[in-house]
Amino acid sequence: MKANLTLHREFSIGETDKRIFGSFIEHLGRAVYTGIYEPEHPEADSSGFRNDVAHLVKELGVSLVRYPGGNFVSGYNWEDGVGPLEKRPMRLDLAWNTKESNRIGTNEFAQWAKKINAGVMMAVNLGTRGPEAAGNLVEYCNFEGGTYWSDLRRSHGVSRPHGFKLWCLGNEMDGPWQINCRSADEYGKIAAETAKLMKRIDPSIELAACGSSYPAMPSFGSWEETVLDHVYDYADYISLHMYFANKENDTPNFLGRSLEMDSFIKTTAGICDLVKAKKKSKKTVQLSFDEWNVWYHSNDADTKIEKWTEAPPLLEDIYNMEDALAAGCMIITLLKNADRVKIACLAQLVNVIAPIMTQKGGPSWRQTIFYPFMEASRWGRGTVLRCPVKVDCYDSTEYSDVPYLETVAVYNKEKGEITIFAVNRNLEEVLELEAEIAGFGDPVLLEHRTLYHRDLKACNSAREETVKPAVQQGGKLEGKSGAKQLELVLPPASWNVIRLGGQNQ
Ligand code: AHR
Image (tube, rainbow, N blue to C red; front, side):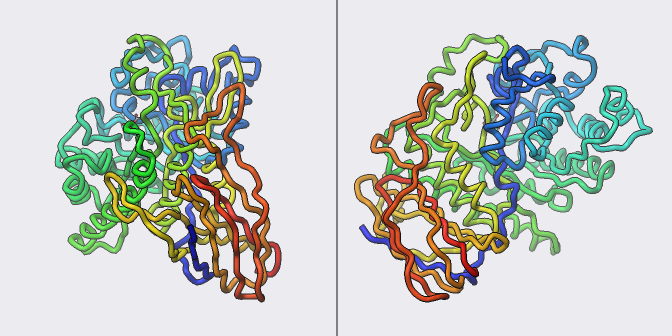
């Protein structure tokens, strides 16, 4: 099968916001305890954080971490997680039916985020709590000193404010599974009042309001419009969440789901602009895709987990080759919408539906989905370029006209590099790719990396990294400066990173 694409320096969609390479740590399962934090582990630092895990998180290239939930936040008292450890209460976590020791809380998490060089996206509880608790948390975290909550932080040994810039106004408040879920009108009102208060305390913060938990929610669309009617003047982003599953073992359909993600993004952006027009506002509300991933492998195992235990192995999906392709399609979709998606979080980061896994007292290791994220974070920063493609399409069980090639390119002017990210969705055949590369001077082909395994169900483990990138030979980049032709072959069912650059771009 053949594919033709055109790449031109002027085909700009927008700049990558580095915050789209975000991830998520929730107090859930083994994400925190025996994930990022395990004081008894031989690799633990003096604060109990695992150096091996921090090392992998840095390798992954995570720019931002959302915390502390997720569903967990809707029943969380942030005050339980600050101050002397011996006074922190053991609580029931009613979101996940577990016990929470509160050994890690806001200050420890901020310390860990510094260790891995990432920003923090804090979430406030709009389930069981409301504006007052959220305002107090902003004062505790971001106010210099001389007030009750800021001085409390100082008394806890944190003299400088954390200065968290990005905050979520609750989590998935449209979902019946959420602790104290609300109607769009109820949520819109409390979100607006909470936002007002938080921004009075720190006007420099940015806020994300809850959008729909997934596009198939019956209220999707009307939820966004009603919530934004209330919160438009105070919120900077609306959130989107989406998880893919392949329960029916229908891989062509599974890989087509990114078309639905694309339309979810475009529809949500349209609703933001509708409310902007209704309000005659000059401000554009942007999108925060703060939960995305594949999630289904652990569903059955999770029903067998004993209730009210501490840090049980919940949501421990083991990802395979085709999951890495789905994750790759999702990342390309986020990049293709760089003009509207300014924040995105791979959900989650360690052990819980995660690219990084740990064994208690043992090693940490990379799942298959680690690689598309890592490579996009490393080479996907710059100007995102639309790549018009000519390629055959297929119809799957739920989607029509799914192109066999999913692709986008990013031009990094400072480095003089152009990177094409591409997924060959054809499960049987190679794609012979021909690309016209115009307007970039005289680049050379630096590298063609592929993630490929003939067995789509192949997984990695602590013992063996079966699925990992390899450098592919045989590509050609020829022609004269300013108009070059690229030819290379994409293996069937593969994720590809094609790097061009090196000379006068
Ligand atoms: O990421 C796992 C869960 O998925 C989060 O807690 C929730 O927000 C979503 O439903």
